[in-house]
Each structure stands twice: as structure tokens, then as C-alpha cells.
Image (cartoon, rainbow, N blue to C red):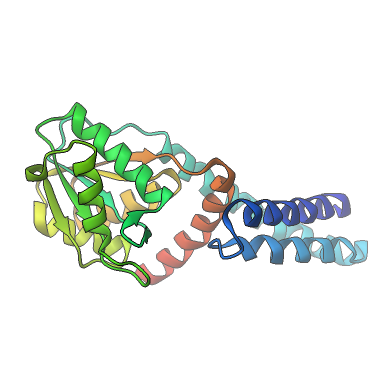
Length: 235
């Protein structure tokens, strides 16, 4: 077990260095890898007797983590239902007036669905965050128009600040009896579709946008903790 803990710690520290070299030291959740790497290496130095006490709780937590990640990955591989009434593109960070890489990939995925389903309309969803010059909804709309999507197909929901609000406010626009496709990055899709069901969307499917390959592990691990926090707030 000592070798496993040490190897996990070294991998975490290596991945932290990779993240900050690729995307910068302020990358969301990157400090988790620095912290966990330090913890795992510290645990590897404990006496075997103490490690024996914590081995089973750690194994249970690991199994829970892997099971939940499996559900995230399964949802990310699902295909959207064709012919939906509305596509909802969930907002993400806007850099000034331009979409971040994550948001751009969501918009690209949404635009592809709209080209394949010419009767479907789109709801651009997302309010204005700190350091953003325009709302996420406006950024989505502007980028869709640049991609050749007709402006008369685009509706805007520009007040939301969370996934729950994204979907609740979008459903208020489209109605609870319509068919929706939710577009977001694959790691986030499970939580988004579950939220849609909880607020009363009876016909909903998901479409996963791609994510940055280097940051993919970071995103999926972060989503595990985000989903736990989300569940606690809903209980």
C-alpha cells in the first residue's frame, strides 16, 4: 500500500505541474492536485499498522468515486435525441467578449445540432460573471451568428448564475412540455441532465461537447466534488 500511495502522490504532483504549465497557476481546481499529492506522499510514510486502519475506508471511498465517475463517463457518451424543440447551450466563462475554450466547444456542438435539425431553436443561457464584459448568453448568441446560425432561431436567457437556474429559467422560456437537448461539456452533462429532470423537464437528452484533453482528468475529478456539493444542497 505504501507504494500505491507514493505513486499516487507523485502522479498528482506531476499532473499539477502539467496543468499549470499548460493553462496557468490560476486554473480552477489545480491546487487540489498539489494538496492531494502532498497528502498521499505523507500517508505513504506512516507505519504499516496505521495504514492498515485506513486501508478499508480509503478503499470504500475509492469505489464510490469510481462508480460515480463511471456514471459521468456513460452520460458523456450518450447521443441527443433528434428533432428537439429547443437546444439549451449552458454558459461558461467569457473572456472579455469572447468565449473561453470550454464555452466555444459547447457552442460548436450546439451549432452542429442546429444545422442537422433546422426546425430546432436554441436558448443561449448564462448571466454575467465577474470580469466578463457581456453576459454568457450574449456571447453564445454572437458566436452562433458568426457560425451561420440565423438570429431568429436564438433565444436568450441572461439572468442565471448556476446550472439549476440555467435550466429553470430556460424551461420558463420554452415550456415544460417541450423536448430539450442540453449542451455542455461531457464531464458536466450528468449533473445537468439530472437537474433538468428534477425541475420538471419531461423530455430531455444531453449532448456532450469536447473538453481540453490535458485538463480532462482535472475536470472529471472536480465534477465529483461539485456533484456531491450539489446533492447536499438539494437534500
